[in-house]
Image 1 (cartoon, each protein chain N blue to C red):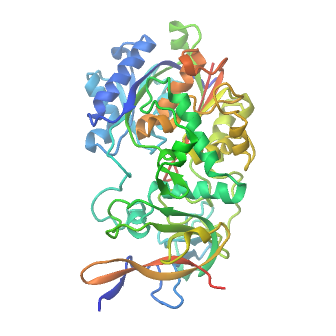
Image 2: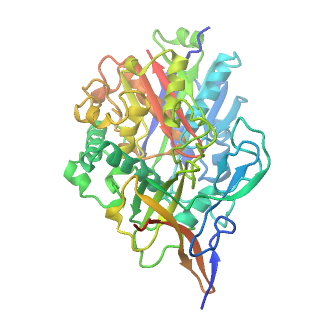
Image 3: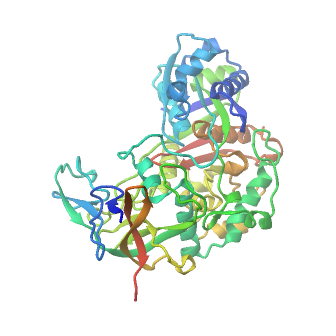
Length: 143
Length: 395
């Protein structure tokens, strides 16, 4: 049984049931950032240098989406044979920001629509000899 | 005091794919521009190079590379990289020095030779580089982002596959007689819609290629120009603005937008603000344009540009296209050159090539693709890492 490791450290919680992306919130102006910010607040009107790590909303609405039909170059670890995969840009309601993620396996691409509600899940991005590398993805919210 | 500089000479090496050293293409463009200007290399006081980042060290110091290739002359030098806006930044550097009275004659050049297929990030493991990470974690290619914008036009405005195909058909027709275009071939809507899907809804024939190419301009002070020619074509404005926070339209190579939760949205979104800054500097508006060259990275993106440069309201671009307004012979021809659809992208040369095209039309030298009575042209582009530019060229 392979170990599961995050494809990148510290960007999301490893809770398989209810994962969250981890963003930053400036302690001075409350602006949200993803990926996490640690140096200077990127709100030009703020000189804040301290951030709180915050779990971001788990759901949002599709801002846009696409289906990639060609294998991207490295460093993407494309499976062989290649299978097209969808990517969605999802707008989080509370944080009012759009975050990209692949769409969960098994989703019907033709059913996707701008405005559709999606929730965050974790899935394998790629496997190597030792591990399954896990990444966040978006999945249509079950109703 | 006027902030106009003259475009005294323009030159281009045709776009194509030969894999030669980028310097070879650039020299051809430089010599053509110098000859067109009636200026000798020895008279050039500043060489402003647009960099290529895919050709090693010589590309990073493009200005000096071309100065050395043309023959060290002791001229001032500057090199600029700003992604698709590199050429505009290089022109603006020359313009600023001319307007400051630091020189009278500048040569601006950009050239590239590019690998096949998807543009890939820098090699090696680069977990701090968002451009590396968006490939690693998402498999988000450049067409991924173009497809997002296209899909929104469909779901929000009712744009169709046929609308996007029509842009390619129009541009392909425009490029048929352009000697510098890489692709000189007419397409039907059926052929475009029959090409392979790359990033849904965008197909192969709707996404621009990457090309080798080079363009150069000779910019001078108005005083210098008036001693050499009766009616110098002028640059009235160059915009190289960054986005304003919060930027809520996802942009390459990012994973996420800024958050609009704490700070009020800026007056205009980024692409709109690029052209707006140029209009403001020139004291002109979209109603003054005779023609425009816009960055059709995808055929759908050209429709976004109609709205971003103020030719029509959001959602109305398809109507403008279908009315024939943006076709040669129409009210406001867009991409009479054939656009990226016929050229492909040669990053550092492209913004300069846009200005060469506008110049030819304003001089009445655009041959079979001439826009009648052209007096004011606007070029615009936008790509990644907050880069974009716009130039207004006038009679």
